[in-house]
Amino acid sequence: MATDSSSTPSNEKPRRARRTRMTGAERRQQLLEIGRTLFAAKGFEATSVEEIAAKAGVSKPVVYEHFGGKEGLYAVVVDREMRRLLDMVTSSLTAGHPRELCEQAALALLDYIEEYTDGFRILVRDSPIPQSTGSFASLISDIATQVEDILGREFKSRGFDPKLAPLYAQALVGMVALTGQWWLDVRRPKKAEVAAHLVNLAWHGLDGLEPKPRLIGHRKQ
View 1 (cartoon, rainbow, N blue to C red):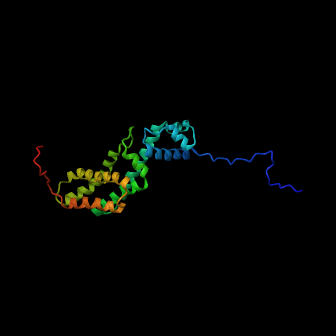
View 2 (tube, rainbow, N blue to C red; view 1 turned 180 degrees about the horizontal axis):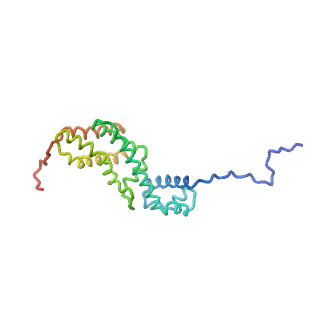
View 3 (cartoon, rainbow, N blue to C red; view 1 turned 180 degrees about the vertical axis):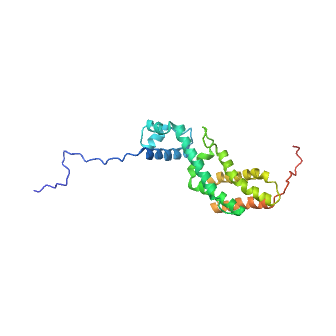
């Protein structure tokens, strides 16, 4: 009786498929993605090196080798998200008309929240360790700086003091950022509608701006 040469002899064990070994860069990227997900879901304090390593299928020393510990991994995750958000907002400012620029900035922030939800959740938490790129508040200030020149030109053309542009830039960007934090969880109304309402408030508020506003209350300053 002919023997089937393709069959595995009874005394030989089936060979296991070899696991593809990650390069250092691939392993680093994997750890960053796992850390980003865990930090967004649980926060910095509640996330452990053990959990990060277990999710990656590696030992704890591998995490320390790449980042020096949980703090190092967290710092890289935050810095990358800060740069991503700043790049998205600043690169969106392409239109010439001030109202369109307001729309582009609002939509860029909402785009980031929608596409990089985990990253935004991490950014809006109080960071437990110093960051090379600063805090979320400093990031908002950086974005506002991009808007200052636009507002300054608009103020000058309307006969207002352009030195007040930084104050209004902070107010406008802060309004969008805080609304973004609220929209992060509710996701209603739709993104474009949220942006439209933000710009509606900002633009028509600017349109009716008083050159020298005064408080109408009687509280002494």
